[in-house]
Amino acid sequence: KKYLGPGLLIALLLGVGLVWLGRVSPRPVRLVLKTDGSPWPGFSPAQERGLVMLVADSLEVSTGMPVVFASDLLEAHPAEAAVLGLHGSRDRDSFIVDATLVQADGKSQNWRASGAPKTLFHALLEPFRPQGSWEEKLVPAATEDLAILLEITGWETDWDLGPRLAPARELLIRTPGCASAWLALAGLEHRGLVLSSNADPQGQEKCQEHFQQALAVLPAYPRCTHNFAIYLTDIGNQREALSHLETALKRSPRVAELRSALAYVARTAGLLDVGLE
Image (tube, rainbow, N blue to C red; front, side, top):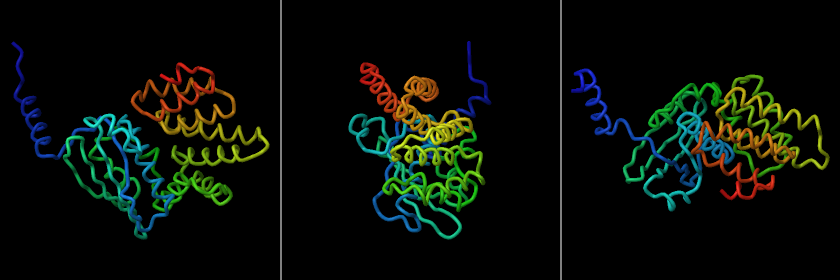
């Protein structure tokens, strides 16, 4: 007969005990990110949005867990979705983020993350048991570089590209191994091409190269694949966009933004049944 050896039995009992004590929380099936709507001291509105987006990136890359930014999912799947509330502040040398996780069963957990950028994000994601070296490829090491990245990532209301392109390019000189920084620059360039009345072949080539560089640093990067697929569709290359999305969905089948991009690309390619599905 099969039986549990004493070592395995002890390990199992310890694991059960840790869960019972609340020191190891079960990973949610789906996660909704939100803020409480109050000002974040030391953050601009763009930096607040940028931090929430970078937290979502980090969760999707390190856990494969689908993350959304609205409460619609709660109504559709009340038994499966958890809510992570964030509130940030900044002093001169570091960011501070207070987090509250409310599980679908109503149990809650509170914690504070602070320190240098990589320490901050590692502490913020620790309850979700992230895997891999995601923080090395998504989060700059210096606090000021993180502040610049958050500003560019969360910027959406002002269409004046001028003040942002130079800091984005300078950031990459200091952080060439940061996929989120490459994505931020590619996003600005994509927006510039949309605004331009004349298509610039060199501008398109650079923009595409920067998307590709982000994916070379971090191939399993859902938001980057989503944005790159939209860009490729905008320049008429739906075939390549669909190929990137197909590969990404094999890696991250539960990430909703990849499926939203697939719907957009399929619709513009005339594949209405695929888009609807």
